Image 1 (cartoon, rainbow, N blue to C red):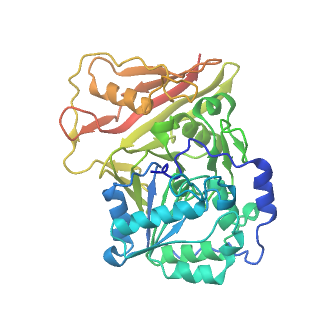
Image 2: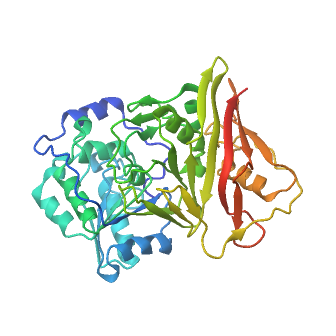
Image 3: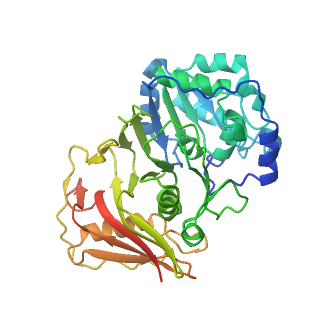
Length: 429
């Protein structure tokens, strides 16, 4: 079985190639108008969507019409066939056409009436303004954007640095406005972002060096696109593969640097379902085996000294299966069946010397940030806990605190699952 598409920690699109793609973007259609209030919905997955995740695939298909669902699969974030050395091997290929067929087969296996690849990638940018492809879009009731590199979506669907809708993207916006579902995984979820969409970076380097606008060949450099992605989700920044790649640090730094007060940090194989997307009424539901962190920076304060960057007063809410969240009121609502957890443990929180799961640490553990937060929630032995980065120079300390307003929720009476309002601070040492 070939590797699941879109699972690399960071796909690098060379700067020279990116510039070339921007230079060759078509100019026939430059409309950036936004349609009326959307009536459709989003299903955004944090990457690593497993083939057998019936819950998430089923949700997308249900919202696309159930047994009559017709899903348009867009994999333009993948490399095209011309750049895939294994293009002729169905077990090893990872190009746009191969990945499109892969997802189309999965959607039909999960019950869609029809699923079709939309023939669009960096070798076929002109298709984004093709009337024939627009007609294909208009025959669909739902859309799925695959993983890879979200920058390629800018190139193929937003006319590159002009950042204007192609005819295909304008058609998808119109379908969303009239009730279609738009789903995506990994890069396909990040591209739903509004302004300041993340385009790369690791947590430690982001905390140490800060963020910068643009797109860089260095995969560790925290970077963002000021104009953003498609702008389908407006109430917060979006990050993906969060716990699996230790991206909580980069998400907090990017939000603080760009003046955002909320991030939806999605974990793998788990979806954030968004109703009324793009409006002030956005409300959200989590579906899947992991969760979604809501990073709240409304009361956070950041500053940089000679020692390094410091953040104080952020809040960490971790929502799990069937939890809901009202973006307008900032109110989380644990799922029916979950109840407040009364901590009974007396053991101290285990030491954590790699809180952001560094790529440089061969012995690191994914979901380390969440692990420390849940361990603190489950013990009555302490109200605060600290963890550190693997790297030094400086080494950053993350402080977790069960301050006023914090609560933990459980479904089994023992383990902390949902966390609401845990205080988080970051400081160099």
